[in-house]
Amino acid sequence: MTNPLKERLIAKIKAEGPLSVAEYITICLLDPVHGYYPTRDPLGSDGDFITAPEISQMFGEVIGLWCIQSWQDMGRPETVQLIELGPGRGIMMSDILRAAQLDKGFLAAVHVTLVEASPALEAVQAKTLGDIPCPISWAASLDKAPKGPTIIIGNEFLDCLPIRQFIQKDRFAGRGGWQERMVALDGKTLRFGVSPAVISEGLQATLPEAQEDAKNEDLLEICPANAQIVDQIKQRFEADSGRALFIDYGPEETEFGDTLQALKRHEKVGVFSDPGNTDLTARVDFGALVELAKAAMLPVTTAVPQREFLSKLGLEMRAVALSRAKPESKDKIARQLHRLTASDEMGELFKAICFQSEGLGLPLGFREMA
Ligand code: SAH
Image (cartoon, rainbow, N blue to C red; front, side):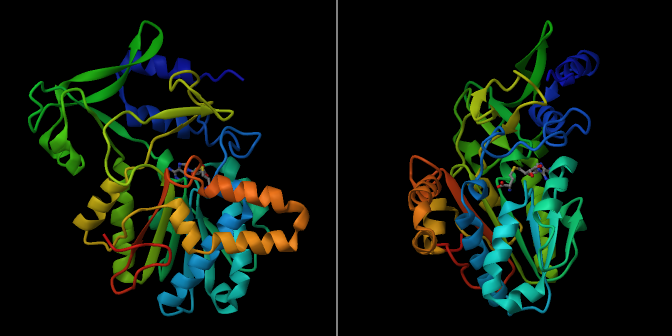
């Protein structure tokens, strides 16, 4: 299906001038009429990309154990808001709640809230989670979700939040010299350009500390929504106890370079090739997340590789138990385990990070607080 979004973007740039990369991503992913997420279910082997919960039920199940442990660490509050950001098809939540049967007290305390931008996916979630044994509702954003002791989870949520890109254009790479990368026109084709003005000092102050090490032509990305999320988590955890777990792909420390990528049917394609019909994501800068949390005085762990995190949660033991229960699926389960943990698959590139309220110990699966 051809998507009229490209023509609309071209007309918009012609009329109003170049767009920031973040504006471009926002329109492509979230335009209510022609955007990527609102108009389809992009997940699974028939879709454009596949995620850990879609690969194996074991992923959500061990996260379920993590949630039980967190609730216990929080002092077993009578009610706990279990909030998932960007729940996709609802598979992870359904696996979490199945594992949660292990602790009936936890299950009785859980109220589920899903934060989902796509009406199409919200409908799929309602179907997947139609018969769960606890109350469930949807909220437009994290700050609209019910208050109280909270566990927040988000798998492959942060990578689809829009990023801005800046290029160091000062030959001597002084402290200034950052110019914003823009989406502009070359005749009737979309292309990258660079805004002629150097960014303001205020904006520059939001770049991660690695900006100090930039060389001429280095590109740095920021995800402005990260600051908002950290801020909202901080406010929530100041009022009530809680933990927030995010799993996503990206480096432990800030790295230079353009990481924006488009995927269609599991293949990388050009970011301007088919706006609105391709998924756009960027690597999550875990170093920048830690910096933001520290600046907000919000306790945060260092990021750990997915392999290590899942292994500490007992993923291998879960695989053995499942294989015993279903010997005919032994090979399939071994392949799933490999995809989730091998270093040439998701094991190293994907990381887990956890924010939490003051006074809780080290969360399960992590090495240390940052
Ligand atoms: N967590 C799921 C899906 C990941 S895909 C999984 O692991 O399978 C990203 C999800 O985030 C989708 O559900 C998408 O619709 C949702 N999403 C993207 N941008 C969003 C935003 N700004 N607010 C809320 N949800 C968003």
